[in-house]
Image 1 (cartoon, rainbow, N blue to C red):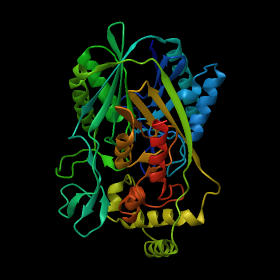
Image 2 (image 1 turned 60 degrees about the vertical axis):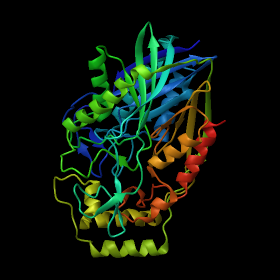
Image 3 (image 1 turned 135 degrees about the vertical axis):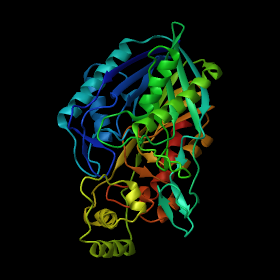
Image 4 (image 1 turned 90 degrees about the vertical axis):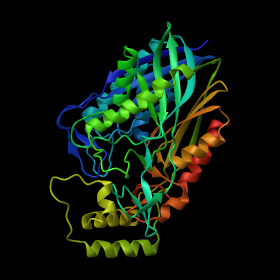
Amino acid sequence: MLEFGFSRENITPTRNIPLCGYFNPRPNKGYLDPLAVKAAVFRAGGKTAGFVSFDLCYITRELVERMIAAIKEAGISCSDNLMFSTVHTHTGPYTSKCFDDCTDSKYLTRLVQKTVMAVEDAVANLSPAELYATTAESTTLSFNRRYWMKDGSVLTNPGKLNPNIDRPEGPIDPQIPFLAVKQDGFYRMFLVNISNHSDTIGGDLVSADWSGKMEHEIQSVLGYDIPVITLCGPQGNINHFNVKTAADQTSYPEATRIGKGYAAAILQSIYALNKVEVDTIRVDHAEMEAPYRKVTDAEYAEAKATIEKFKDATMEAGRDFTSEDIARKHPYVMKYFAQRLCSCRDQAIPGRRVEQLISIKFGDQIGVVSMPAEPFVEIGLNIKKASRFPLTLVAALAQGEVGYVALPENYTRGIAAYETAPNNEAVDTGVGAALMATATELLNR
């Protein structure tokens, strides 16, 4: 028999706590919509496992370990069987250093406390349930954001209606794996796995971005407050910008449009949900090394020359520094990324970096695997193709975060394809293949 329990807690930061997601911190001036931590736990065959989702940009391995320890201290025995992930909103608070160290220690303490409360209540709420599954699809809301240009270079976010665009560097993943839990004759939770960036708003007001608007729209249509957990799929090279239109796609109305679009795809798939008989839940863990990026002597010398060339360059006051400035080759940005490349050698981080992966399997039908990074979409597609499960979910930004992870060929494009540009915390070029192999092996055990 399958049992299910759910709970949520408000984790909206107070005013002035800086927001994470861009190259410069933005002290928040309030909120557009609240942030939450959601805990969903399942029990079958004597095993309890589940998902803890945060309306945050990312969480580090160290913070996950801190949460697991606090949950254990509260007497909850399933703490090691929980998958911790974020929706990757760029209008939530810092949880560790990201370009700048703007974390708020009181907020992080409260975040851990709220997480323990949510998990504790979810476990207390365990009761008989049924699990259903299907796949939805959306082909119009996500785009590969790296483009081959007509001069043979690759740019990230090259700008709308840019006549020099040739073609996207890679694909998207339009498939949306969709799980639903039913109790007492009602759907009590939806869990969806969507490969798209959650960065549609900008500015200095807190928001859960399109995932929050998607949940609100689903609740509005169904007529009751069913929680929706978004597992962010591999999206390191994916976003919502359609370069073939000049429309403004950085605004709260845009988050609403995308949220409603995904909600429509999910709601249309409700009648395709099929019951999944779950007699057992299996949880497996794996560790893998994620070495830091190394740079060649030639790369280092070129970066030093760039720093000298643009040594007096500055960024205009009061303006957010975004990836579009990289494509424009703004002098300050060229200097900034050259400095980040040099940091690979000048501020090299000593020691090994070992990351954790977890898989949660519902019988022989559904497999979910975590990835502590922002993997490129190709990595997720390859994992799903190699998985033994009829339905596979790949949760990016889960159990930690080591930044963007691509395949080896993506690392030859230069700094204008900024996801793969070097810095002293970035992974080395072989990590993508290793991560893909580890996740696949973990699923197929």
